[in-house]
Image 1 (cartoon, rainbow, N blue to C red):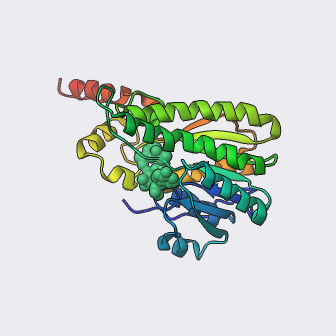
Image 2 (image 1 turned 120 degrees about the vertical axis):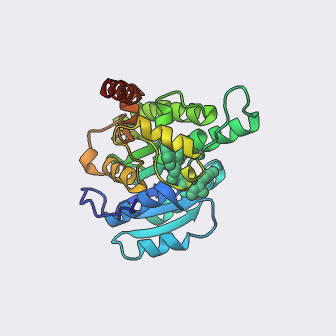
Image 3 (image 1 turned 30 degrees about the vertical axis):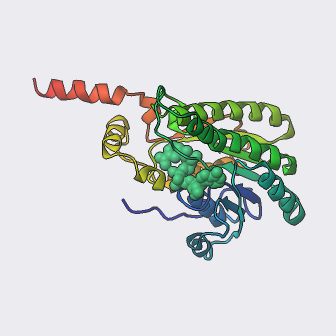
Amino acid sequence: MATIQPTPLELPGLTGKTVVVTGAARGQGFAEALVLLASGAQVIATDLAEECPPALTEAASTLSGELHYAALDVTNEAEWSALAALLQKEFTEVHGLVNNAGIPFRGRIGEIARADWDRVIAINLTGAMLGIQAISPLMRAGASIVNIGSSAGLNAHHTVAYTASKWALRGLTHVTATEFGPRGIRTNIVHPGYIETEMMAAAPAIMTDAQLALTPLERTGQPEEVAAVVAFLLSDSAAYVNGAEIPVDGGFTSSAGVKYMSDIIKASQQTK
Ligand SMILES: NC(=O)c1ccc[n+]([C@@H]2O[C@H](COP(=O)([O-])OP(=O)(O)OC[C@H]3O[C@@H](n4cnc5c(N)ncnc54)[C@H](O)[C@@H]3O)[C@@H](O)[C@H]2O)c1
């Protein structure tokens, strides 16, 4: 499937605004950084690597916003504090935070090692909490936090640590939306379905087939299709959207497996 190019969305309230995106070296974080740059934002792209990935620098060079890069392991509180101090010095205030960094882990309940559980929770859940605690003091009314959940956070996907981390991220989202709402800071969560990134490149073909059989749109998604929703939530167009959960999954979680049943019934009726 052809990659969709990021297009300026002409969303109000993003031009010149400072937005931090975690896990921006590739995949959805990369696409989120680009769509925000195309909308005129100053993007602080962060990831584990010391240097900004050349592909990001190159892709950003033709876009209207300004790209900055900072190495950041989301599980490291000291690195979050250092980033917050830098942002306060250089930009004074921060408009947006996208807690995108995340890792999969396909271990099941009954067999997952404690260390693997801890690592997944540390990155997918604690990393977002640390980010919110570090960056939110730099936010003013109108600011917006977007957490990247997963369709696994809406169902009982067998990847127990990953699933539990994304369910818990929903809780963090709702608490933050409630606590920061009075300050005019909005917090929402986006739940991608099967999105074609390197994270999914290692998924077994049988899993892809099963996912497609359960997805009403009958295709996988592209990172840009998630990024567009993230940019909307960061913009003033979403000024009254707070505490929302938005699946970007082709109808997968909405259908809740019913597509599979419907297709089987339809096929059996056609053979009669
Ligand atoms: N791809 C999918 O199908 C899918 C589906 C649902 C949810 N998600 C979620 O979307 C988000 C992005 O996923 P993706 O598909 O782009 O994955 P990806 O693996 O392509 O990219 C993830 C990025 O996060 C970075 N990262 C990992 N650990 C980090 C850490 N400790 N600190 C900072 N950065 C770290 C990686 O270096 C990488 O650049 C994740 O939270 C993931 O759980 C993805």
